[in-house]
Length: 180
Image (cartoon, rainbow, N blue to C red; front, side, top):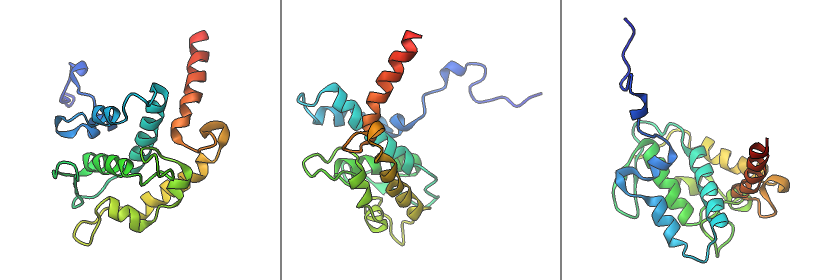
């Protein structure tokens, strides 16, 4: 006989698992809190651009952190590991403006913000130390710095070189799909 899977045959009961759920570890809807922190003056398109900025950087940072690394949230003091830890760390770095070159808008990612990253800044943001090592710190940092070069494509990412500016490309693509 074949091996029985945890959810077979009720595959519809498999809970969602992805970056959004990692942000909401512990049952706290951190994305809703983030959205509400921007107030009503930020329109829905800009909210979406900011979330695309956050999610892209966070997903790129999410590679195996190793078995010993952990992240202590500055917001609630709880400690998280693995993908959940990387999600919370990236969210808190995003809110602190680590990935933004715009001092008046910390909650965005742009090419100039990514170019200012160093291994030391990333180590500080991820709380890496001799006693709290993370696998691939240099590679993670290098990946984000190289992303800055890709963001310089104004046709895709606009003059401000933000991942969230893909929103315009998705809108056009979505319209083309619906029309076909």
